[in-house]
Length: 242
Length: 256
View 1 (cartoon, rainbow over the protein chains, first blue to last red):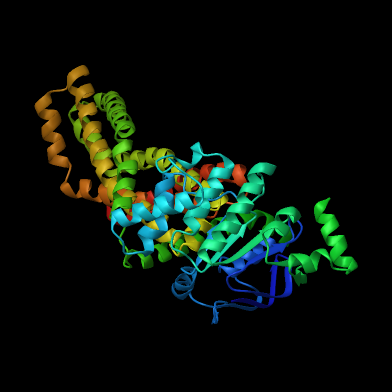
View 2 (view 1 turned 90 degrees about the vertical axis):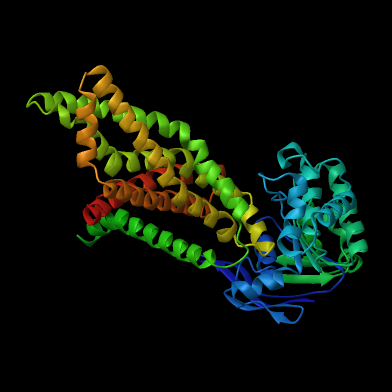
């Protein structure tokens, strides 16, 4: 379980998160939607401790990570995998080396075992024969798949996704959506996705949280959000669709 | 008046601030030096990049520096019959000053800029954030190996530069300007001490620290996309070069 309690964060004089509260359920896909530049990425980076809040608390599996030192924070981070917007694969390494990286760092496994896991994870995300390719040789969708393979290499309990379908064509977007759903079913991990893509959100989410002006203004299942009579929720969805 | 002082002092404040941040990065890097895992493979890879791949450029600049030094000093010394001092002047200049400084400047242009560009690109494409999310310290993984490699390889490159500079000076002095070979060598051996060479190498190691630290600092604090990477690269070369000249004066004052 991830708990965000009264998180406030400002950059210079601009308040990006304003006493934000959110509970994220375990073993489910939670999608946080909001407009571009609305603080979604900032929120995600709080969850993994890349940004510290000005005030408030972040609780991960019962551990308050808000003021943890780097060493303890690194221990908590081992529960996480993260897929960045542009995958953030290491340019100087092959795809195989990228996926093997967290295993080499944190798992005490033989080279043979690591190679097997790399192949398994790449197969899981639908990539074949790319182990020896450099990230620059892959298309945008393939890079995201490789990034996901790296994110789940250590079988983390929590996987974070930063705008996984941004910049992809509709076919590739659908394919990444299916991949997220299928991967979550197999791994039973907690997936937290941030997005401004309302169609993808309704496709993949077990729970949707709406971020507006630094606060979570509505939370519910896709059906609850879709059938909501709340005029604000309706307008929010319409704005995102437009 | 206050406004004028504020305006005039801004560059100084910026410079001091930058130096302070660089020193903080250095302290953080030192603290990671003694904590496992020790990444020897990454260090050797950086040593190849900093050292082996810079040999060509160091050979050329070192040789021509020694040659031009011999040519210039010969014409000056000839006026009072001191041609025999050309060899010792070239050797002393190369080992104490020109070897370490020119090597450091060439490596700054080739390696310091590349460090800033590579780490800057990693920063703006979130690869450094990715390292953090995988519980890997970017300072330990990226900064420390580069700094160790530069500190170790700059003295080696300087030895090469000193050697080819002296050989170049010999070639011009003895080969072209017909200075007696025995006198050229004898005066050089008389005047140049082992301490001159050794102190030059200490300078080189210090310059290695400066250029790698500044390159990494500018890289990991890059903001603003491709434009930011370009700016970081330029700034790293300018700041490293300035710091190399400033520190050269103080190191010389202390050591010689």
